Image (cartoon, rainbow, N blue to C red; front, side, top):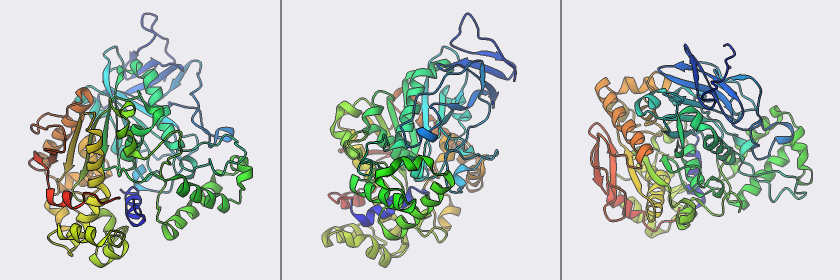
Length: 534
């Protein structure tokens, strides 16, 4: 992928625990309920949960040991066992990160290195063996948490008779630095820790989710933005093989993975900021977390101003990842048994090009200077001529949306579809208010419809811009598709006859006021991008 294009892809990702109870001697594995309290027996010990919004929920479950002190910069270690009953009735701390609306919650979050917690919603922790959906949050690998209000899993669990899991993982300089080249003393510092945290969470699910009424052999991992890229990375990660059977990618750019060279350069810059020699990496474990956070701010500023790599990303390190995300498609032994649903939003780039963020150009001259000049003359002319309104702002936004989001998704669908079922969607819903504001179906707008949460800050926006009838119908269609796919690998439901994606028909579900399947939508623009390396 060319450097100028990587600039926009990486930037896009940024917006982009009551009383002690006794185990049931007849069924020690599962649940005892007393009023609105309940407990389950996991591999590590008894967990107390509670009933909320019609479902049982356990919050702040440690899926690994706290990655602190000697375990800082070490791959997540298996969780410790405990005696008695551990309360799991409040969310655990979230990963250290800058302030952001992505962590919005009715209850203020505490930030801590001790952040490896997950949350479970289930209709009942019984023997039913329900399908499991594991959500990975977005935020540019620097922001977000699994306990944000918008990701509350109660509605999905109720509607689909599903078990819903959300999780935290290490972010920023604590989760995405690369140490192989710097670690000259082989002192045990690991790479891709944020992704490997996700793998550890999936292992916990594999070992424990049956106690919550879930089926460990019917797991769907899904995520949006950086969470979508995380899902794509897990498809390509050998350590994740067999931990999930289906995957849903929402607006996850598939082309942002760091090479060793880039990762080494940025890690060395971080080491210089904190004045730590590659020969003395152990000193990193002695630094106060505030020092690390201040250094991360300086590193982020440097990345924004001086490089073409604007956010943290996983690295092709030769252990977790042998190649980029598309590599897994060429190795069906790795991801060949994983069904995929993948899609984007119609106007992904509008949020990033707005005046408040100004992360992407909104004018043709800036698009050409910052982006299109990295393509050949023939490629540039072919692309811009396929957008009829170019050089108007709408066409500029459409080019960025297609280049950063849609076409990488198509490329992955084409590749994965060779040996696994793939379903493609596009979220087109854009009420008049958003069109007039120049936003359209912007990045992340589909989330309240997928989770059905329209009471949090973001969800209330949807209630304002969509009528109750439209909002309820679109929520019904999208939740049905997501839940059907998680249950059977086929999303078909109320919205129409949705066929698998292939290069002949390119069937794509367009979610809108009137959702429908369209064959090869915007084919002219798609074909204009063929052969362009990004």
